Length: 354
Length: 198
Image 1 (tube, rainbow over the protein chains, first blue to last red):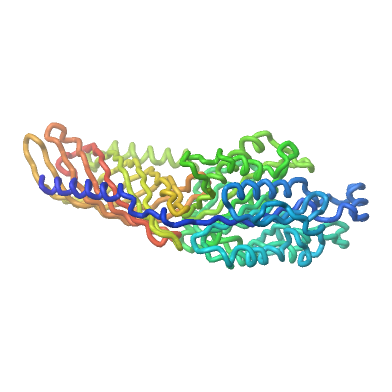
Image 2: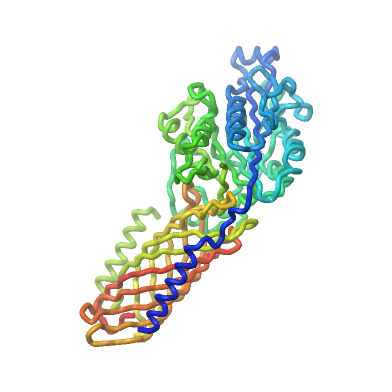
């Protein structure tokens, strides 16, 4: 009986100790920074060949409608929550804009087909902006968010597959195909983005991509995602395959040789690796971004603790896409299903957005 | 194998052991417990995560009355940590199976109150949880040791009530370390020879 009493006393002591806040980090101040890009117009609408081909239907219109609205809205929202925001976007008329600390959009040029010469959201400006606006002022406990809205693509000729997002200057006329195409050297490849982020000392990095194929930027090493990379065929559930893949990942921790490691950045993607994402005139935003914005305005505080984490924001946006877009059986302009599923990185850590 | 086939197989195993209970003298029971986990990730400091679980236990005595094997099926959840410092460890929920050796000895016995035994359980678990708000499943192994006290009332010799203090190490490859402890209570119902229960 004495032993039992001792065991119970030890348990009570342990419970008392664990109820204290032994691991409280409230003395740490994490400043928040964001780099926000959006590309609506990819080429000049006045290009005569382009206009002729779009008119006669032999060429697809590479322009989108709402990435500039996505970028502006998110930049405004984040700035209102105390973020230091740098934002660049190209609007539908081909004008480039830049906003820095003041928050007022400043015209900085017109659409360029030269990625290195553009003043807007080009590939060359990503590392420059990180170096000029963030790397020198951010500490190891600060949080950095990168957002891009625009086109995304996949290199199906590479093995393993690589995915890209398509910044300003990366869509050009391809005379061999009589079509506009994403020039991959001017696109941002999944592993290139990881390289840009290495310039920041903090491990607290979040990448949000509202583009097609953006799930390819997720480079999970341990987790097995049972939402398929192409969800048109419908959602799947936990299966023995999930268990086998999870055990296999546990054994080698190297299942993904592309994409961003969850230990380098947490990625929230609009779509899976092998599917498209969409924008909608009724919401005047990308579908995922619309629900992300709705969530960040307060609804994504799922546990009602007064804070929104990146995972809560993802969960709210995913739920919004599922319940308000996918459930309506949307159809793309080419007649195929426009169902898609947002994805998120694994890794054990989540970050407070605000 | 689909979940329906798996559940049928589990039901078959339970029924098989039940039908041959006289020979096995095994025990079946359940337990519930709370846990506190200290997790530390790469580049981040340690934090506490609280959780709990429900367990379905099967105990098989070995030839000696002081030793046995216990296998368990566990459903568990671990809450996210606090958000101090603007980071947190994600919450996760899932299932696990454990196999443990059980070693106990009599602490006190009375014809009126019954028998109190103390001892340890030690073994390993395999867990497949998924992170809250996601469809991301992951796997890890979990060595565990439990301090154990049991009471078999004289009036209810088929029943054994157990109190356990588990200490487990989650061998997660995405964390620097993860260690948990807690408290669980449970009850076992012995089918067959009551003299060979833990």
